[in-house]
Length: 288
Image 1: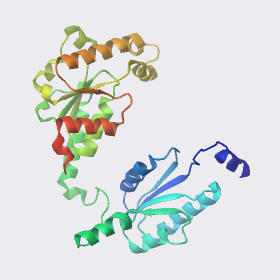
Image 2 (image 1 turned 90 degrees about the vertical axis):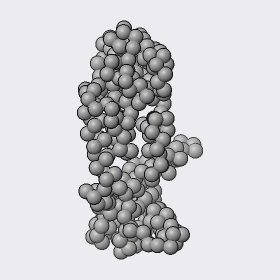
Image 3 (image 1 turned 135 degrees about the vertical axis):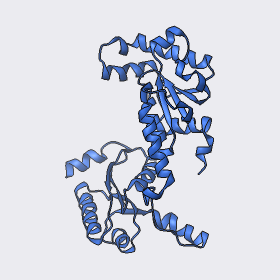
Image 4 (image 1 turned 180 degrees about the horizontal axis):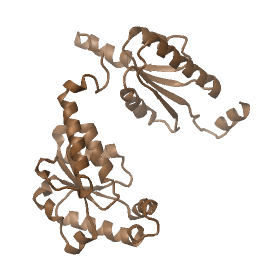
């Protein structure tokens, strides 16, 4: 234990890593999303533990025991983000028996809003309650199915109902961005790869010419693209740096010529890319 402690603190000015728990009586996604946004302000990478569906006293006791045991083993107080509705369950996790820094989203945010609005909340946290009755939920499922059906240019059917069509060379981030837009925002996002045949013709794929106003381009640093492609097809022409440089340059030139907005995915997160796309093509989706 002493050797472990020495390794943790031997680096000058290093912030010690801790275990962070996300405890919820639901999926825990709300607690984890909020917690991650806060933790991103600090330099250390922490061990994350999500404990969903903690909705009984017995389950609460078990998770408190786990939290306390973790603190003893690591010699550091764990951090716990919670979204717990039951007063009994919440009292057990926030009480003196839990040897952790507990950050309670209900008491921090919901209860002050109850006082401000003068009404009691429905005490439901997250987006997955009563999903079968939620139009938003059904819209997101429909958008996910649409994005999967139109991934990587598999289909050009129904592009008239697409909200966004992502363009870019292979492995520039189109698929994960399309699925994120569908899952998080209910956006019907198709994506099309720009391939050497398109560059030889010098124009967009024919299926997209009528939908240029819906198109948004993704590009990427050629060196990074070569690294990604080499993981998939090592030593191939597809992954060669010179070929990656050619494809990226040709794709950017084509999008610039056709007046299609684009950005580089090299140093941007999917969240940043998606927000930029929504801002430029569907600003209405940034208002709920």
